[in-house]
Length: 155
Image (cartoon, rainbow, N blue to C red; front, side):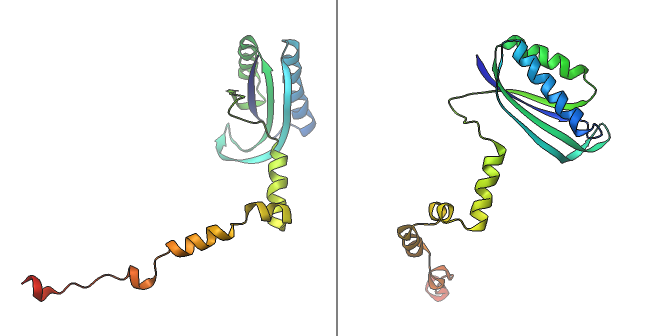
């Protein structure tokens, strides 16, 4: 079984409850085809970079799952004919190179760093040796100044 993820862009005019049911419908389809759901996330309503079918916003859902190739064909076919799915991306993930992380975990880490949590600030703070080495490598204003050449010697 390979690891895949799909991101669904759902019509923002659809009530949130119906949009979540749509996401669950696709999760059930994956399970019926002997797939395994690894992670799901509802990212909510986000502004689009450009209009898609006249919409400036869309509801995003992420589904990460393990399955065989025939499931992908069935999913793509159903996405294509579902009027509520504005766009979708279905990609294979190389499990050796990528670790699946929840978007909420990354947000929490950034929030802790912003608030100045000792754990995150100590990890991300530059080491004293690195600061001293950087100061040694930084040229002074005199070293950066253009050197004047004696034009009389060249004549």
